[in-house]
Image 1 (cartoon, rainbow, N blue to C red):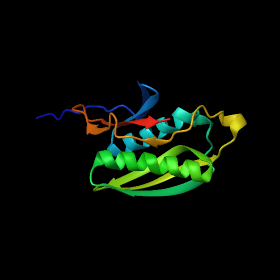
Image 2: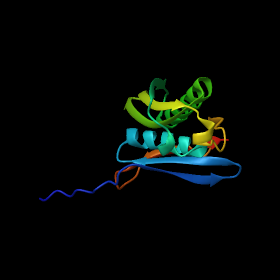
Image 3: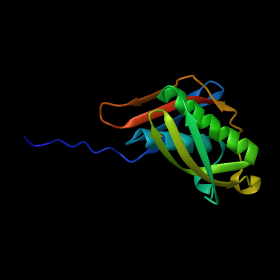
Image 4: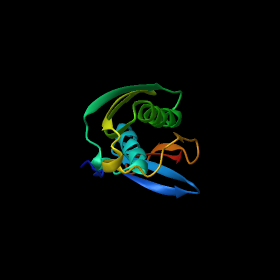
Length: 147
């Protein structure tokens, strides 16, 4: 019997409106890729992610009881690192093993003239929170970020 293969599109991110806040959504062929793209969407709330040079690597580890809480913890860890280090991140690698996330975020110190930050991300929320694999095979990781 011939096997069927469904091509999954490369990862991408997008925003969705939510009152005064901003929804971030990561889409990818794996859960990890969706989490990476959600992080890019978080940066894109603040500035163009392509303007952020991968000068410095920051390691981040999160543990949570389920995928949804892991996404919130991951995004909030990024918000914390951006705030305390005065940095922006534009590239991410994520590994997830049984609700344990090990990641690296690459970025650089904020350059207001070059990055022109639009808003400050205050934190990921439980609003519209979802991490799921679609029947077509790709993953979606999303939530609303308080700005």
